[in-house]
Image 1: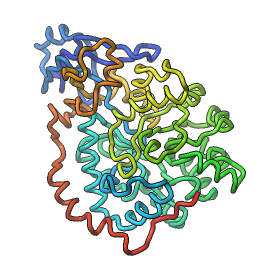
Image 2: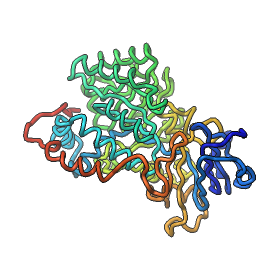
Image 3: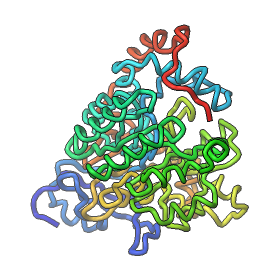
Image 4: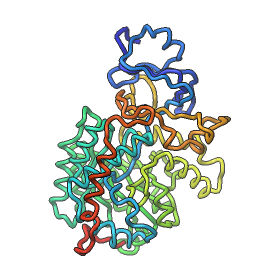
Length: 453
């Protein structure tokens, strides 16, 4: 370790680490040394104490806590927290056409800013240090991310109904904001979905992605109805549309994929870029979709599956902790196999696989020297997490988002002992409340798009 002062030392905790074969293990009575936003060492608490004589700008004593890589929300629409609970108990088509898309036609930059602030506060409090967002007015979301200290992978969504201007704005945003916030913001092109974006626009997007070295983030094969409709109308699945338009040769993040079929798997196995899928199981349950993301089949062909929440308008929550537990439980039920998905496998999806899904597998997702210092501290002293016989099972099936005590991104403490340090939630809630009547008005009869699959 360097003789110069460390920026941060976290000591006395149990650290979740990955061994050389990426298996989840735990180091007890450990310490993490952070310098210039990077993990310099994961060592023993004793070694850290011996160098306490190692000057540090900040020290966190974390006895009884587990240090984990910050969670990644691999697909969400952060500003949609403003619509939480607005469209309940509806089928997908009515949810979009009767409520969400009419309301989204009212969106202003200020609504998006306030929604993004509230969402970031919720995610920081739940141990999410990075999120992948696919929405509108994303320059405003990038500003919020810069200010509050999170990490984000952002794309300006577009529909073909917007004309070429929509695609142009998506490219302009991606080029103008990548590397913002001292590198904490990465960007993607963001066509909405194969059923709202034409093959010509998808092909053009793939060409732009290759020309500019940009990834692509979109919805595809969200549910089996979409796949069946695509087959009936066009003779191909949504994944086959991505293949024929060249998108499977880009670095691609596919949201949901519960409608992925067995015939799609060979295409996903031999993509020319880095393809990943984000799963958000709570929303699938709410919409009563009959299928879930085929995690086991995707993992078997080497496609990373990251954990996500989708927007709070459908999920009511940005709780990735819950997504981790639900993914494990639903996979057991779907596969009829209690040995799959294990707690350690679920933790792997929540950490390294989620980091890879958003293209950051080389910099976050594990607590190791050289990785960015995105760290959360989880308190396991509560009665609902005691006793601990299997630490991985305790984290996945007993712990909850409220057990996160401290959230750190790039070595900067964003929440300490449950106190948010970079966002003023009461002010945001008050201002958003005053704007809700105008935002939620549907009397105009407009929609940003039509849901017809």
